[in-house]
Every structure is written in structure tokens, then in C-alpha cells.
Length: 190
Image (tube, rainbow, N blue to C red):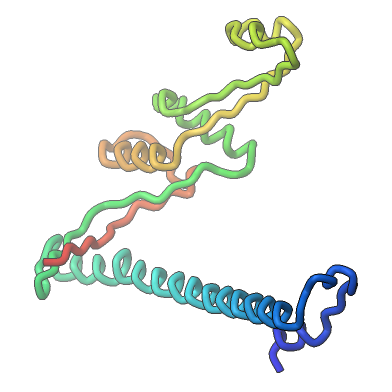
């Protein structure tokens, strides 16, 4: 007996909630719930299978094919109607730790990439304070309001910035952004 079958044997409920439920209706409901549970199990298995296939595909596209093409001195080849070409890629993330994030943002500013940093400043206003909310940001602290702020760089912008700085031999701390520069094989079918 499976875990789900055992579940159906042990469920108990308040009988008053079933006053309008017929035997036939209860049986149909039970079947529908079991079918939905079965589909959820199948879906989870397929999602895991898809994740496994993606990891396998990525191994070919990011490791095996680029390594073999570099070994034989190729950056583009046609195989059975598929054009395979190598392209650089960047993987990078902002640190999650608030202190490390501030260090990373300061590093971007110090290497002249501060224009890529985004900022949001917000304040919660009470009722009938709409006009005050529209007033300029500098007055907020003077009025005793406590603004919340967020400072960040978009993930795709960070990757592009790092790629361009590396390509142009400009300063960037790859370790700070857990950055990885590599090559990916892209396949275009015939």
C-alpha cells in the first residue's frame, strides 16, 4: 500500500460537513482528488526529469563541446545540418549578505560603473498626506520621516557590465560577484 492509499484509509472528519453529500457524489469527489494527487506526483517526476535533462544539456553546451572545439582549433562547425558556434558568456550575482553587497556596490562605483547602480527610495504616508508624498525627496529626512531605500543592479546588466569590462581589460573584481566567464556552444538547426 502506498503512502497516498494509507492516507485515504486514515482520514476522519466531522460528519456534519457531509450532510448534503451522496454516496455517489462522495465517490466522485474522492476519485477526482486521487486523480489530481496522482497528476501532481507525475508532474513532480517530469519536472525533476526536465531539470536532469537541462543539467546534462548544459554539460554538453558549456563544457564538453566548447572543450572539444577548442582542442581541435574550431570556433564554428556544421554537423548534420546544425551550425555550432562558440560564444562567450558571463555568470555573476550580487552578494546576498548586506555587508558584502555594499562592498560590491562600492567597488562598482570605484571602477567608474556607478551609473549602473539603481536606487529606490520610498516612504509610507498616512491618510490625507498625498500632497506631502509628491514633494521632493530631500525634504523627507528634514520632516522626520523614515524612508526605506533599495540599491541594486539588474542581473542582466551586471553580467553585461562584467563581460564588457573583461573584454576591454578594465578593472572588475570577479570574485566579489561570484563571476564566471566561459564559453557556450550554440547550435542552430538547419
